[in-house]
Length: 166
Image 1 (cartoon, rainbow, N blue to C red):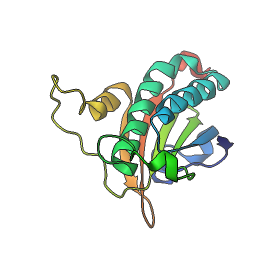
Image 2 (spheres, helix red, strand yellow; image 1 turned 60 degrees about the horizontal axis):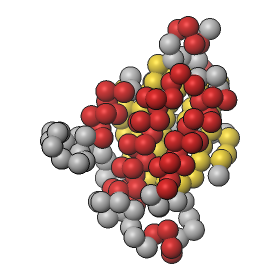
Image 3 (tube, rainbow, N blue to C red; image 1 turned 180 degrees about the horizontal axis):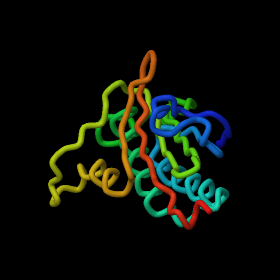
């Protein structure tokens, strides 16, 4: 499911002026584990369509982390999507948006939770808990904003290398 057009990027107005936006695309993701793979496929196709395939590794890693967090903490039980969510709901509670600006790509993930992401001290022996550290390491900047009413958007910026933007 893909839709082109405006995305949930209003909180970034001061960071990336609307006049510099070249393109945007978004997809809706259901509360199921397969949505993370769908998000990576969407990211690969979108970046390739924009001629920015070289950004795929970092953008896909961050996209995977943000979508996984949205499914675990924004929609699910803290360990993953709610086991019955895919069976009982046909609504897509998570929205992945990619925007191509003149000098950067913005990845944003919207979910229905009001709770913001909280980086923890990484335990390198643990199986989880390092996602936001990966997001910080692989992107130029990241943050989150509450949405009017309910929900939030978590975003990450990726600078476009100068030789790619020419």
